[in-house]
Length: 321
Image (cartoon, rainbow, N blue to C red; front, top):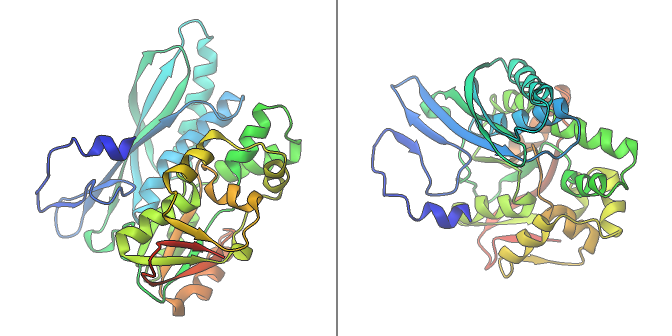
């Protein structure tokens, strides 16, 4: 839907606009001077967990992630709130508190926001960040021979579906929440010491949707090793039970004909199309750096894995085997 809407925007030719809407990147980047560019992003959504404080943390981490995916540091944020008038304001207070504490953890500030009366709660942030103009990471630029690194396990959408159905274990709930509330800050800081050819974060389009955006914009094929893809273990059980979010089916339908699989079990196919909330970073880097980057990420407590490679375009942008 958003990609279709963006076609209605007027063309933008400002030379200081380093990143716009052309490749569906994670945020806009505007150059202020030779040393400084600003990053601007916005994200908000309906609750994915019942606890309001935890929901606020998840929504904030998700919005902040776009700044990290562009290679920047968050500076400040504005709250975006939709909230029913008939719910206790204390619930909203807990949501905003959770978000504010996650923004503080990122080293940024909450400086206000806007709210409207709505039938269903929604919360998120508009975030402004800073980056050096020469160090902007984009979702295109992957080169043949690159290795692909993923910095968080998949499966939160499937586990959230199990939670809503009342079928998720306490352990699965804790794993999903821990993943969704973890900032991509440590991952981004580790990556800052290495040559990165392309980067994006994995959110609503799932691993394959965002990988397709990166590969197609880079005019390469991503070959993904199914055995190397990290996922939350309970997600496999729930996928085999058929607890698949509607977004996974939408992602698969949208990408029909744009990917190929070889002997990939259905449960894993569901996981790689699973829409993620506050997912990890997908990085394309020269092969010589890959293992050292994974070690640096793990040293910072980031669960990272090399999941595949980029190669010259071979008739299909995504191959999972």
